[in-house]
Amino acid sequence: MNKPFIWDDFSDQPSQLRDKAYKKKMRKNEFFSLVKTVFTALFVLPAALTMIPFIKRKEIHSSTFFSMGVDFQKEPKLTLELLDELGVERVLLRFKLWEMSTLEQLKDFILACGNKKIILKVLQDREHVEDLQLLEKDLRTLFVALEGHVDMYEIGSTINRAKWGFFSVDEYNRFYQTAYNLREKEFPHAKLIGSGVIDFEYHFTAHTLFNFFKYRYDGISALLYVDRRGAPENMQMGFDLSDKIALLSTMVWLSPKTKNLLHITETNWPVTGTAPYAPTSEHECVDENSYTDFMLRYHFLAFASQQVDSLSWHQLIAPGYGLVDNREGIRKRSAYDAYKFMVHTLKNAQFLRMDILRSYYILQCLVDEKLLQIHWSLKPSTLKNEERFEVFSKEGKLITDEILQIGASPLYISIKDAQ
Image (cartoon, rainbow, N blue to C red; front, side, top):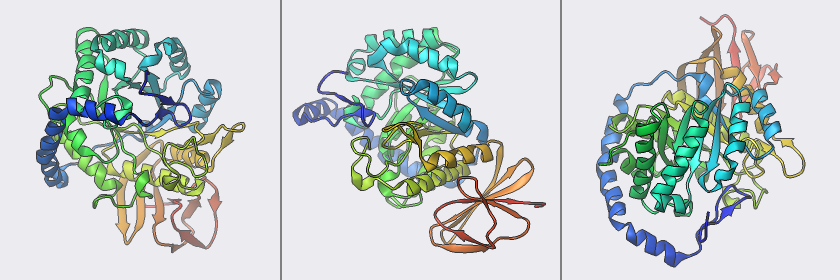
């Protein structure tokens, strides 16, 4: 990654582009693509909104719904141990195209993951965006080295942020087209997903799903962060998380360019007091208890949609936003135990229904032929703890109180002899 693009090792992302004249020049060069993005969205988004009620739920397999993002270069031995302890069957790894020298290290880590399904997020830099021959050469090297070991490749990421190297959707379209053409000619069994739009900016997504480029996706990836709005149930332009997923999944269903698969390949909340490791300002940061609650509720809402095929939490070890803080030794946050209990509890869950009444949420699943309910409420409420209930906290601790306090922290209620 060459200047003016600079990678920030603290927050694991590029630094902001300071050269405003350069940004203005590059955006001006891509003016016609930006116009196409606007006009495509004007047609696609209203059509998708109209079609939302007609989209049927898919059957999502809970065993591969939960996915954990990890840095294969950060505490690799410990990372493998923690992944086994968490019980996830799907892992997302990032690979930087400007660090091809780390390919053997990446392959060794993937092989050490055993039978886990691997999503490999291929991160771009400006050099590979501008030089598509270089991109093809390095992708060929990557595909040859990892053939048979990667479940799917996410081609490019965060395409609607200039600091990541793209200045228009058409630049991304050409980037993805290069990967697709290579796959078609030489690697027919490789699965490619895109387009890696970050946040609730679906006008960019629309342009990647409806265009005249001759390629197809094996599924759509989205970095669906909602942290700037606080809780996942909070509204943005009239849409909460469930609404955003419904709209995105409808666009995927309508598009002629992709299979009907949706993968959320990044989401998290930054943790307060962790600068410079937090990827946002302190204003968006939350305390560790809220981080845990929001993480769980995000997963429950996404699973209840029955439209999200996998959800990758970003990520396992990271001081500013991870389940584990490694600034001074290794400290598992409370979110670690909560994530572990969630995965172990719902690993073989069959979704039944989601009930919402006056900000009170009940997710109902069938787990090993037993009824499981997950309760939370945005307004403090109470529920009598019946004899047929077996109640657990978000970290998996048994609760025997006669009156259950239902609030922001989800409770798991297993119901005995439920018909």
